[in-house]
Image (cartoon, rainbow, N blue to C red; front, side, top):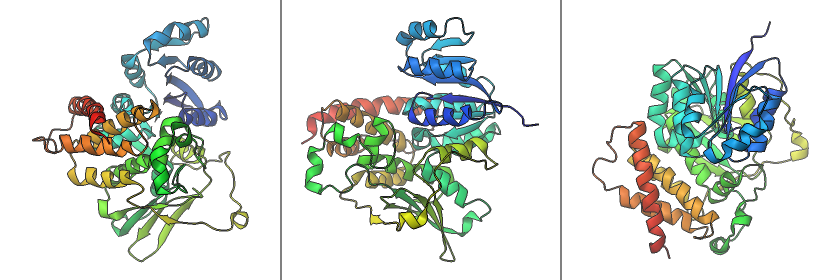
Length: 392
């Protein structure tokens, strides 16, 4: 008899959360939903909580609580709101937790879940970028497991199964190139929010789609690769692969490359983490290689994608610089979406914030704790906003 697994999904109303719930809903006898959390899309949160019979539904916005309570009236589903309630929901016993809250806000509930020895499926990039050593040490201390959900890191993870990691020479992460991969360089400065919000391959939320266009998304993944797998910066490469079907390649010391190939569908990586250590049938496209015909690759040009160079700098400087990078990146994205800065000015804002904080005594050697990360996060966001005055 199949054992029912208790699961929680943090960031349930976003694209990763929705794909996760799609897989869970296909096996109602296999899963018991403990907690679902979301933001302002209360209608979606309530709908999913009811159809999946969640024990608790949490909106991180207190002003949305009344609407959530009204929609769930009479269902017996518990309702809560606010950041503290999200963390409390993460403390509830679950066998598997999806961490898909966007931004640094996902760090605290992820750490809380690990304290209870759960399996944490990590789609929140910021957790590893800002606090990789802290997150992984917390998992080790409590006998918890962290599984990657980014398609690239899931691909690396799968390619390494049964392999001796000391035999790995290099890891190649692929990037679609985003909305502007075919644009001439001189046109990028005038790119609009609407143009940056349309991805040629993936169906994702606005913020991650823009991050894909700027390659900040890939920069985050480079840092994640170092933190999660322990590879050195010079082992990690990025190449543009417009088809988005080869998600990563692992190169070994005998010259072999192990590639993970699959459709551009996040349910593959999510499903692998959801069913791990088993493989189960997933509702994803089966590739027709003859129809595809060819895979193509391009160099990830440093001039076109300055975010990748900033990621290298983060890995070189270490310490809390990942938290600085992430906070400045989030602030820059906010200002771009608000049409207060241009597309290319996002990387300028991040670089100038890093420049301001890099010389600060002790930054690289500060003790990494949740408090120190949140403190530098707040400081970096303030400095990032100040840099607007200095942008050309």
